[in-house]
Image (tube, rainbow, N blue to C red; front, top):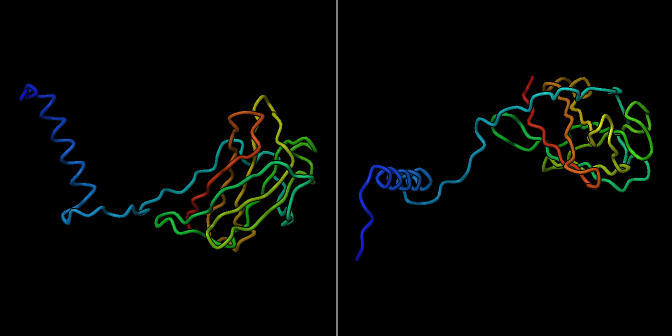
Length: 170
């Protein structure tokens, strides 16, 4: 039987593998569940508040639809889902500009902290296809800090965009 030469590299690789397995399984040898403790809050993104119109109505759909804005809302620290959170969505679409009131709408998160809102196809503005989303604390009794997001689509042909909020209690 051929044995690998004992070098510093093979020693370190073996130690790292053993340490990693011990870290994952813990002293009991059972896999430890993943915990969300210490989940950092989502920072506001640059340009996220552009063309924000406070108080857009909660709607079942913006315009004629065809594009889906989805995501989740969780509590910073423990990662617990946050139901009933109002998320506002707006974008430059095939039916209007970001600044147009009819391009804005809001939805509420479900029991799992998930949201989903259908809207017209997003088209590039300033060279990038992107959406805008907001959690505005003034419409939620200031329970969490306000956060504005501006996620960019990988392609203008995409038919959905997902954004996730981790909110810090106020």
